[in-house]
Length: 235
Image 1 (cartoon, rainbow, N blue to C red):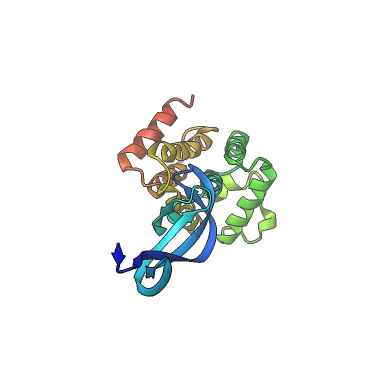
Image 2 (cartoon, rainbow, N blue to C red):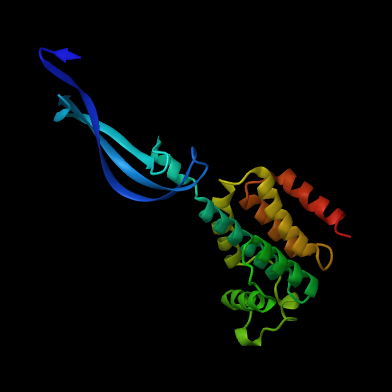
């Protein structure tokens, strides 16, 4: 618009506050971003003069330069999501072994296979047994962790302890917000396959798996359906 001989308008001046990596919806992958806060300014002949108020804060992709609300940062990057899924399977495997015992080799092998497939490719039985020993010792179930052996858990571990409750919630609940129903069901079934590798569910294993399903925001009826179906096809 012309005002006499002057050309005026409003321009937004952006100030970069910080940067990082995020999942860009437009690019469809992990990209670098700038978090920027804008200020509207009255311009005359393209020269900024008076401030006209804030323009808000946005997240700008450095690749496609599209701007998004800051809520876009709540979505994990692909790298972070993969790590969350890997940690979730690892936690479920440990929880099931803690509840059911590690005396049975099929269960240990199933747990190692699930953890490796999830991303911990160098996981070994010895590593899982070492973690289980630390868990049980932390729960106060044994006087000395060095007394634990591969055959000790079946007799001594009888259900969910405080470690399981905390770890399952911390590992699974954040993941549930970003995982489709089919993905959440698959995580539960990973645990079911470990529990069923050496026989029918033990009561403590069933309790842990039901807790896993709840942490994954699965409906009670769906948890029952999935666990029953897994048991029916296990043998």
